[in-house]
Image 1: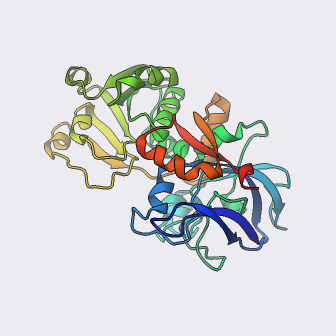
Image 2: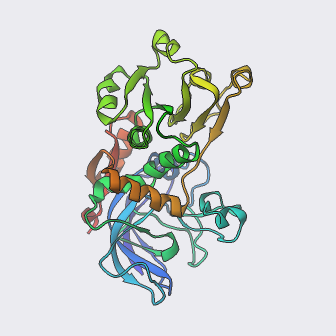
Length: 347
């Protein structure tokens, strides 16, 4: 099935119009007309081959919301006209220990990512949501309420689940003191979700300009992390720290904020190794951990939780023709807090 899209043809070329082939609808497949697609910083990394694993041509996009156009004969959970969503994965082995636990994101054979993966049921790489439509197995398709605000919901498919999963795994809730490091696409969702889960939320940011916004988004306190005195007041106070920063930064300073048995979980992806002083972990018995996205069941749980609590992303909607400008703005941190493409602009 020929589908209009935007693709990067090399690491140095801008994204431009491109035609891709989607696989034919199978018995368990759902074909979705894409209405909106969020722009994740990882889209930029992949388009520019900054992780040295990009398959070209590359059609990014894994924060996909749309409307069901057609369903295969064995599909039971979706009907034509339903709203539907697709996140970072479109398949996995479905038989390893991780998959059997509903942790498809940790599939031992690696999940099939929504783009820049290998479509085991197609004839080439997977292509993402910067396109008019997508075909996905029902098992990896997510439900949305009929009244969902689609543009603001799209970033939940990556930024939302990337922050929700570690918050749930480390039992963040009433009575816990939680730090969220960085107020960007991930961080602003971390603040909203931690607050909705009932935690006392402390935002840590290097930018004094973001203090007011942090409080608006739900933080109980905002600490400017370049202020040594402010950081000192919070040493040994936090149960959990969610680190969303994707650039080099001082992890030891963040570890010092944790209580005995506290955990610092990395969800940002710096392109260089981070330095950690061993005694900062050993003596207070702290944990330095990491977290990926979430499994399909947990992603659906997150979407339902956000619908119940009225949580969406703060977004700026753009046309697909603005995507290269949006990437440059991403590099400058010039977005509050997620770009979302209105895919009607591709028609």
